[in-house]
Length: 114
Image (cartoon, rainbow, N blue to C red; front, side, top):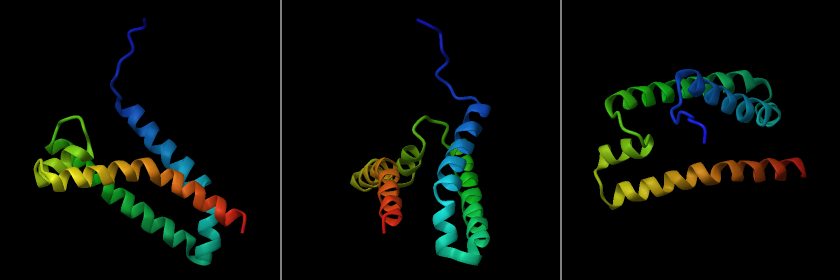
């Protein structure tokens, strides 16, 4: 069995982020963005980029404050405590991560075949 490291270094994290943005954000959404926003497509992408920048800054600050594995689940638990509210939010978060890509794919297919 090979001795493979289970940690993601900075280059790996950057590669995952860029891959997700390029694959999902540009190639899959650009055609729909142009057809829906027309001349405001560039403005829509700038606003989305600013939101992504603020989100990544917030995640970076939270990751420094709570240096535990678990990501957003840890942030929610630290904000609300271990109770029904934080558990419910974490379940909704999991469903969002799990179901959103599928819902987007179905939505794009439905738009394509109209």
